[in-house]
Image 1: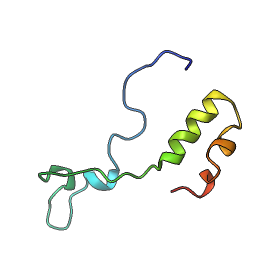
Image 2: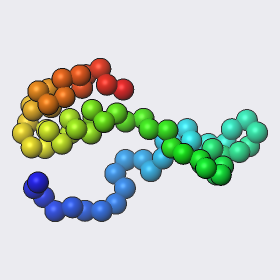
Image 3: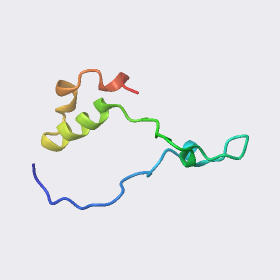
Image 4: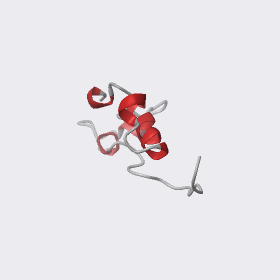
Length: 69
């Protein structure tokens, strides 16, 4: 769909709040079976893809983009 892919981390690897010790001193991501809380909705990802394809297309492709978490 366009440009070469450059691997790497874009943005933060983990939500900052999940890397900080809790009141008991435990770091949430160090617990067995720990999972990352998703903080970016699919709508935002799809909106960015639509914008890459054609500027201004995200509103037509993802109409509720403005209210997505």
